[in-house]
Each structure stands twice: as structure tokens, then as C-alpha cells.
Image 1 (cartoon, rainbow, N blue to C red):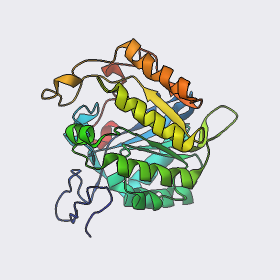
Image 2: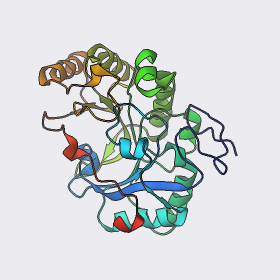
Image 3: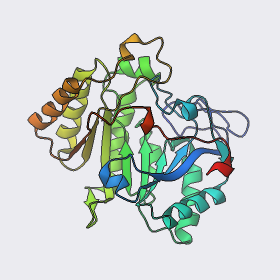
Image 4: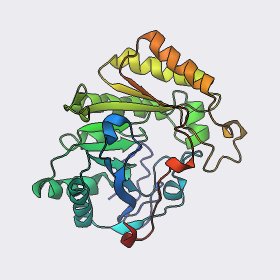
Length: 295
């Protein structure tokens, strides 16, 4: 079957060769554990049950998880084993099941969730994505995903192509976000303040891209007002494959980030998460594994 899950629609038969994302027809993950570094309403005190999938449809040059996105670190697993992992994370007290970089394994995720729900999965499911999605693929997840956690990385195609080789990124990301909001509606929280349903869009502020970031915040607020949450992120760390991109070689200055937060407040954004200056550094990058036994 030709793969058209992501906007690249490379049409590869993944039973015979790997797609642009680096994935074949076998599920590959690099970590499954309680994760405490998401937004407070996602991680809570108990942690989010994060499953990090290997390979990626984006391959951003500044990716902090480049070990798994570009270098393909991880280990193979099956649909039944993935279902067991999901239920194990629930048993450990996870606030939710958090699928990180999941696009290229959507079919397998749906099958694993069918099994897990049959066997007792009750906590919310989070779809944690780069935002580079086809709305048609997101439609397949209707009824399976409770919380969508997409990025909105770029407004301008110039930067989407330069840093991620992702033509028409904003066109696809905005259409996919619209489908997400249509599916799950306004944010819903439990009595402990943990999100149970809704959409939170993330934007990572990049060096020298404040004007671009303002455009994204303005678009999201104009389109959705307070029907979504916006996570304005300052945690950019020079990492990945940026040697050919000198403009990405510096961290974000506090006053630069503050200017974006001030802008969001000025236009009326209320439902937002912001980060402290100490939310930066390689210590926030989890360990990834290439052997199943290390889980």
C-alpha cells in the first residue's frame, strides 16, 4: 500500500522500502515512560505516559530529539506489545497516554488502541505532533484521541523549507489544527487541573524569528480565541544539525521571549502557558533506547 499519511505523500510501499520519514512497516519506538516535562496540565504530578516513536516526517535541522528523528535510534515492537506498553503506563499512574511524533504509525496506533481500550484503557490519549499533518489522517483518529498537542512551527514557507524541507507547512498545519478543534472541542479539565479533552498548540520561538512568531500567535488567537490553549515555548537549545545555519546557533534571550509573551497578552490571549528561563538545556532531553530490554 502506498503511504500517504503525511503531507509529503511519498507513496512508498513500506513493506518494501522506507518512506521519507525513515519508517518501514514495523513499529519503532525509542522510549516509553512517565514524562514530567510537558505542560503542567498534561504531565501533572504523576507524569504523562509518553511513547516516543522513532523516525519523523519533518526532520527539522534543530531537532532536540535528532537521535530518533534523523538517526533512527529505537527498537522494533508490535501492535500487541504497543498495547501492553500503553496499559503498563496506565498501571504506573500516568495521567494520559502521550504519543510523540506518531504520524507515520497512525494505523498501528489505532489498532493498538482498539486492543488497549478493550482491555481496560481509561485515561485520555494525547496526539503530540509536529503539526505537519494531513487533515485526512487526523480524521482517522476521531474517537481515538482526546487531546491534540500540535506544533505550529512556521508561518512562512521560506523558513519551513529552509529548516524542515516542509513545503506548504502552514497550509497543512492550519487545516489539521482546524480538524483537531472540530473533533474534540473546547478544553476540558478534571478537578486536579489535568486536561481531559481539547487542543493545545505549541510554538517554539526560534532565534531571530520574533515577527514570524507574532504572526502565528495572532493567527491562532484570531481563529480560535480561547477555544484552544497556546503554549509559547522558550526552550530552544542549539542542537541537532545546525552547523550550516549560523542564525540558529544561539539560545533565546529572556527579553526576546518576553516580547512575544507581551504581544500575546496585548492582543488578548488568556489561555496560554509560558516557560521560565530555566526551561532550557540538554537535561530536558530524555534518554532514548535502542533495545527493548532497557524500558
